[in-house]
Image (cartoon, rainbow, N blue to C red; front, top):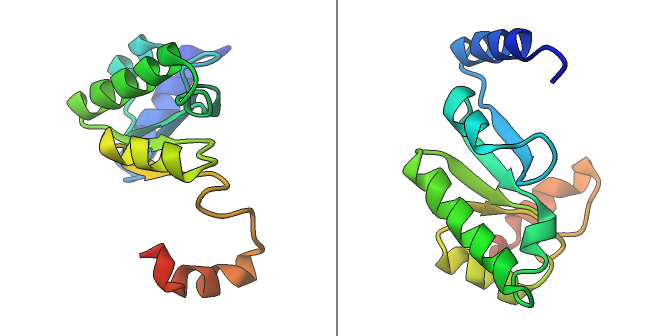
Length: 124
């Protein structure tokens, strides 16, 4: 962020190489609506601070819903971070969220265990 022009040039070069680009922790820190307009990104990840509070905080739920709608209107894919329970997972699915990550799906596992985890019928 110290060199926004240089960063934009680097992102544009990566995009020309067909690298998928995602804004992580969207909604916090340096993320802003202007980045969605200017940066050549394909996806955003909604920060877990909003996702974890969806069921208890109306404002967080509104931010998540609105962010999903905005991203889809801009042809971006959306991942929700911090999906810790089935209720949140189902609510995100109902809102059209494209992907989710969190303990509801899996605890962290070593790479060599991934193929076995992926093959489980409950994962499909």
